[in-house]
Length: 262
Image (cartoon, rainbow, N blue to C red; front, side, top):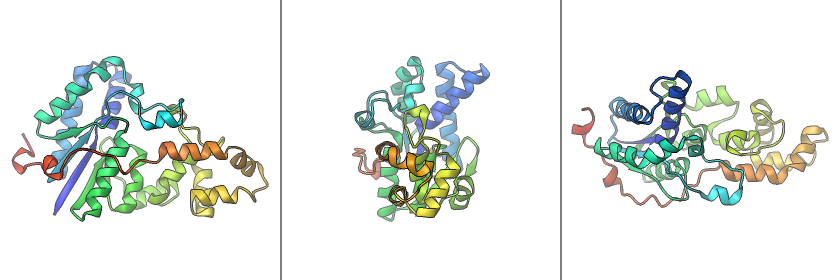
């Protein structure tokens, strides 16, 4: 059976850079790139995919900035030297035999969601997403498997319910209600993971929560009504696009078995 390995290069690069900074070891750009590429190779060796696509965001605006001027994409936390080195990193990945892509006006979450859904809908086989980004967890409900390369563990349906208190298909809505101040996603004031999960369990969906807010007479209901537009904006910012024009064919991302380990 064919297996598509989707590597969230943006999330992995960011994590390895932050580890280097916090430890004051291997914090220079070349070390970050080399360590990230080494992890990419380990992922391929571990999952033995037939197809590989590594997604790496380059710097620049996306459609989300047009929705909210305060939104901060993940590459905004990169130092200038690392952002400038991303095209060079992509060439290193290609030299290692892996296809890599970045799509203007979209982010890695959008590209990965589009590729995963397309592959699964076409019945081509298994999808493994290597990422520690929470946004990808919703794809578990569509048949994708999530491998966290940082914690080195699978994040399946049971793990998601234990961690977030909602099924995989509700993760995006939970993240929208919670918000993410670091990336400029407002959410709803004073709603954290437990309250968001409780609301979604009670009302079954984001739309159900917002409709139910009309009958809640407590301060939570008041905040949901007052910050309704803010909540819907958060959902639009968190929700991955699934119609990105990636511009590659499955043949282009095929990974010959002879290249699986070097």
